[in-house]
Image 1: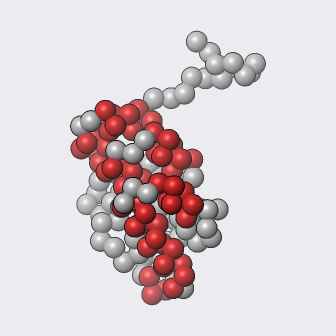
Image 2: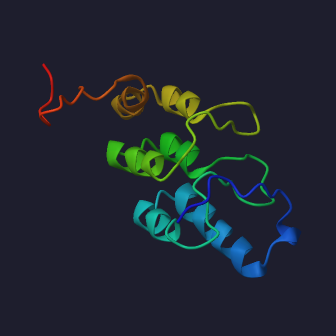
Length: 129
């Protein structure tokens, strides 16, 4: 289960195993290895909202997904695992800023995940029109 955010900035305060997991997550997200990212997010003490411990950009997996123009299923998967939409990188940018910088269909699809609501589901379980 993923933690919302462990609240630790100094990697020296954590066990080496926890820091190694965090670095593996950051490396996988930076390289757009999304299946590895999702596997790592299943481990204890790995947070979808943690940037690389000791790193300077404060990019989370969601920032990296936006940077790479990841598919909607990747972005949705991160959001479903608790990725904070409003989490800012060190430069003050949100992941949506990264998506907008792409100026590509992939970037606009990511933005749609934030601003377009799913159709309401009626009590019968059918989507309203």
